Length: 113
Length: 113
Image (cartoon, rainbow over all chains, first blue to last red; front, top):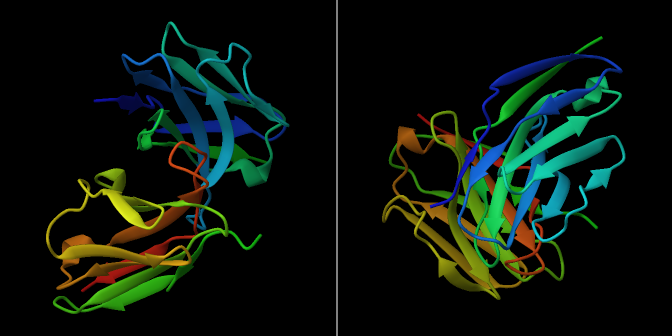
């Protein structure tokens, strides 16, 4: 079974600074997808970024980027120029082609003004 | 696009009562997923449908839980009878297909007293 591990239960960053959230996963597959979801206090799950395993280029969405290390099975999320609105729970998720999402335990990000 | 719509947003009920949660997927999306989120177990997939047909219900906790998708516009998750341990946030998500990115609804916060 696939597992997704987020080793940082909580992280803190100063506004306008950069923070990196860690995620590792375990799989024997070569074709799969990785995601980062944000869950603000409203509880809604919001897709932040998506990475296809077959792509070597790291995905980027504005201030959000990933460092995808396929051999190391690592998928970290970098948030640049952190804003107060970035404060939320962040979930890393894995999906094998044609299979369902498996979520990590989440990292709570706090942004200090 | 209105996004995934869930109702009610909050539900408080007494143990033994029937609870029905509703979900309207994004128009044009063929796959629908029901998740449950608790502090103890994190995010768990309960069941998913593809083209209105249940594909995998291995995550449904027990016979008290049932889900239906009578058409592409609507799905329900029913708990009968409800128990205090069912208290959680229930999310519905939809995607264009089982291999596509999932978009989550705002969730239903259920409290069973």
